[in-house]
Length: 59
Figure: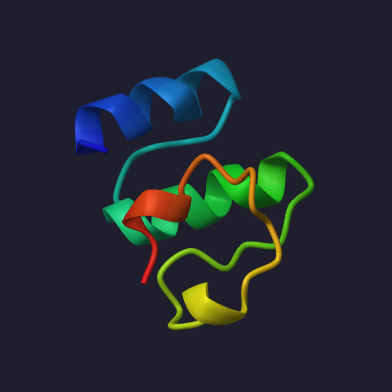
């Protein structure tokens, strides 16, 4: 997912987008949603969140 798309999702959820890189922003969105903020921390193979919006981009 491109950064602009991530920013649009963040804005819809009321997450501040300034000064955050893509990974930080996605983790902020995950946290706002009440999910584990685990995007890009190297645990993708252990993840049990099969319906996660970010799963394809996660590593």
